[in-house]
Image (cartoon, rainbow over all chains, first blue to last red; front, side):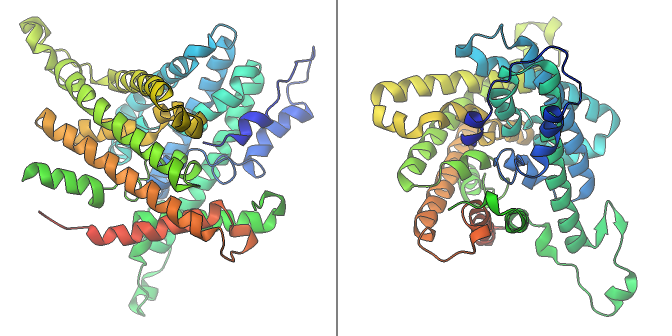
Length: 226
Length: 204
């Protein structure tokens, strides 16, 4: 969990008649994509990001589930923010996330059973996905529902692109497919091309994320740590 | 023999960090010095050892299909397994609260060092992950489940102390600026994961 972010977010007093997509609100959507990306900068939600990125399909399902939980969880917490006593807020937050995740889990079991089997415990682990709790703590507890909704969507999108990028790299190099579609032609295999099976094993997910972070920070030098 | 097998498997072969990436958030955030890493690792072992048996009892006597049969034949059909996420997380959150109070009472120095990360054990994926793996693998006795919990905790402890020691050394190395901090930690963890893969396939 990152502590810096909790400090950074300041309480924004809502001015009357703010436009729905004012400049400030648009930043809520765009910031998490790069400068304040939940995975590569805030270091939240790594657990699930790495474990289910062997193929693109489960990664995509996971990203959609997180979108749902994140956006609605943020709205619910934001609506309740004046009612929750701060001593028990963690339990309240966990209950809200857990209920949303149960909805997602039952939905996946009913409509995409094979993916749900593949994700196994990781659907349940959305509950402890640090991005969600982190955004509740840092943002939803201090902001209005609409802004929290945008923040939820923005952070889920920042999470989703890293997840899907890692999945594409691993699936392409490891199995020669993307989303189950064969991209490397049979001819290449005939000439001796071999899939890199190592990419399918879990440690390579960490190294792929490490390299994504490297590229991002090389482009965006203000993110460099000393 | 079966117990030793579960124990070794949970520590090395199915290590929480290197095989499943569970508890990565606190693993990355608290591994800057060995001392705090040991504190957090010990807290994780303790919480896992306490929560897994409780969740095991909950799973087998309340939640599983037919688990309520001990209440009478009317209840034998009930399947509450859809409630398991919420029940597990409630047990974990309350146990973490308890650990926090104990640490605050008996070791204020450790409490100060762990700071914000102690309450975050509640959202440490490895704790809930342990409970969900316990449910998925359907251990037959409570002793097996507890041994699994202890093993996973020790595996997590070894991983975080290992990376903390490496990071203390790496601080004095010449690393490309953009890779410093987070990036290199990811890559080192990946390399440690490859090393741990050599335990794969070991049978006792």
